Length: 318
Ligand SMILES: NC(=O)c1ccc[n+]([C@@H]2O[C@H](COP(=O)([O-])OP(=O)(O)OC[C@H]3O[C@@H](n4cnc5c(N)ncnc54)[C@H](O)[C@@H]3O)[C@@H](O)[C@H]2O)c1
Image (cartoon, rainbow, N blue to C red):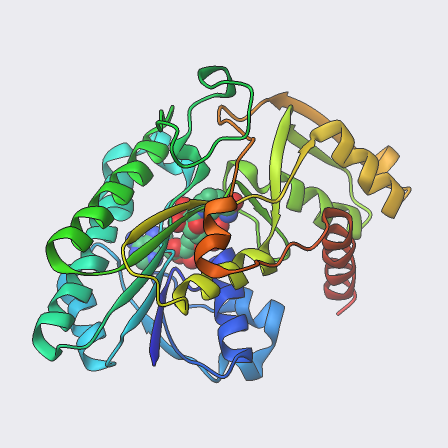
């Protein structure tokens, strides 16, 4: 098995690569960014030395096909993307990266399957941004059967990817699973609209002040669990083109501050909260996922935050 991870230098990508290497897998990384600094930060230089590193743009379909061919790739975790703020400001470039880039990944898999006959599998990051604001839905946890009503270009792009994945299974037999994270947090998360809970933990670890620029509730999902779920899906052997919600623990931002205060009392002075809620429904039903993968890891939120604070504290004293 040869696994390609696109967006490998990103937050989720670094953790997926770390956990794949720990599991003894062969990994080829692909990212526009040549550095694997996040992977080095969370896993050390020895782990970085174990990956085959390729640099390029996901919009370059010919390069992706060549990479999948030359490296005999048969499993792909597709994470390369630009996040919500970038897509809102630059929808055309955002669509080239997030939508055309995803089509390129499927095209590369399709060509490899046609030329070699080998089975290909893709797990890709969709997003909870496919959901509209909470007011658009009944007051209940949303299963995948509810209609998506994205309120941002980013969410529309992710919904388009889910549709294209369905077509690649129906027409070309490429199985895929799209996962819809909400707010992923943990060491390595530093970009995007919902990075603030992690940035607050990083600031707190360094005893610096920080204002979380979001109010209301979010579903917080620990990055190590998220990475493991991507890998579980990759190895599941599931047929079809699935799309699954991911669920962590929903928490209101004032309650998050309270939790931070319980773990590090300095948070009372250092952490503040101001801003608007994220316009995305936050109560998810993820029971469909476990029917395909079996039980998934669910580190309790307080434990995951404790681990993250400790990791940041260790990094800040290095
Ligand atoms: N972090 C979250 O809370 C969250 C929530 C929902 C969905 N997602 C999705 O998960 C995936 C990974 O998110 P993340 O938080 O790790 O983001 P990230 O920004 O940390 O990582 C994205 C990676 O993609 C790379 N990339 C960007 N443009 C590229 C291009 N043109 N060609 C090749 N590589 C390119 C970046 O260099 C980066 O390393 C994305 O698809 C994102 O939309 C993330």
